[in-house]
Image 1 (cartoon, rainbow, N blue to C red):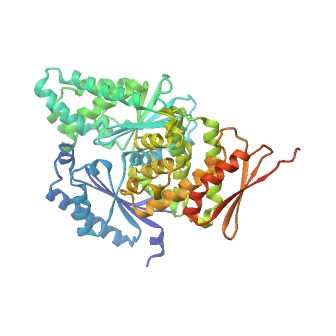
Image 2: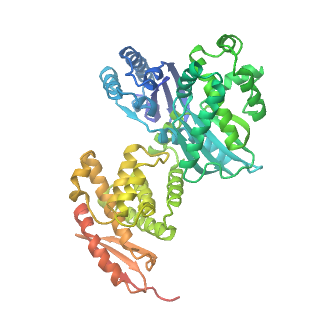
Image 3: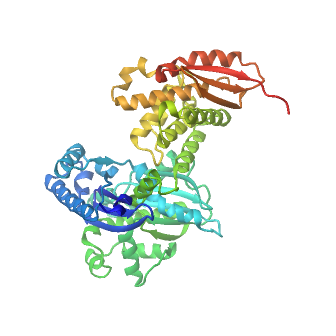
Length: 517
């Protein structure tokens, strides 16, 4: 076997517009092969029709070709991912089954928030390294067939991200309907897009546009639109075009014919229905972000998936987990979570997780889930203090955090649910839809969070530091404090029974005084 093949990784992505294969050397992150195949599945998905068997068969044939390319390179490490939009197809289970039967590939469905997380990565690295002299806010805009995500960076640092279910294919369908019933369909369509953007602001945890100073947007994975702009301008636009020039372009093309777009601007006929919706949507985003210029980037979901694999395999140190944590903190601030208790409990929970690694044998991903759960475990107090843990679960289940799958969100919500009193074993009906493996994970992480929360149950921060030691049949947690901890001992003993159930070790609390310096 080619020794270089060990470092090779192949990622395949299927979405409503087709398929993509990227093969890279994980050590250098240099691409060896990048192949795209256009297959339109969106018409069925967005009309709530099953994706046709013939279309699924074409996808299977294309994937078979991709696997052959992987074999030619000697690549043994490869994965198949599916977009959130395709997962919404009413026969997505059938699609997954057929792809497995024909190719042997198991498809891993991505959530829209995961797609945003991965799509942003390459350009966010560039923003981190850039010296932004004018301190302008930069918005990364990812427009997929049925979803638009906007991520804010300021001074090269991640600020916030959110998304809404509005994309060119959805707008194109509404435009077709409007043209049949309304004389001024473009005006109505602009109002329709604005209404969605207004909803987007109401639901946004920290207000995407934190400043009304002039900004810049960067369109991600928007090669067809970039080519259209270049052909219209009769020049390479390079990295940017001014907002004024783009607005003039939109005004000129609003009523243009399909023939003109195809012949003069060399637009692919398959892209024609999405031209006007994407132009109008981009123009409205320009206005709400107060952007004065547009940049283009080819950064896509597959690039981020490659970065993630390189990180997990130890070839890269590029870790985007801080963006997940920043969004969790934004969410906690939106729901008025008390920050001092939140941060102390999170600190204790992560310390316990790290010291108990010989017992739980969990990794970096699970640590992130515990950290997010610790940050959000008291978010339910926003609704009501009584049984706040149930409200916390509800809030988390109905939130989106980029980089987390829906399964991740369910695990985090369950950890928050069981951080206080009830346990999974007492609540089996609630767990019927969760796998045994996930139940064990939830129990292990919730038990840790429950101990961490017990150490500051009265919110007085009597304990600032802890140490952990594992004995033969017990885990000793030593707390450093000169305060009277009678209440903490009582609460700890009450809440530690769940830890014993989850780990088979008794948790013991010991106090050590702090010598005055």
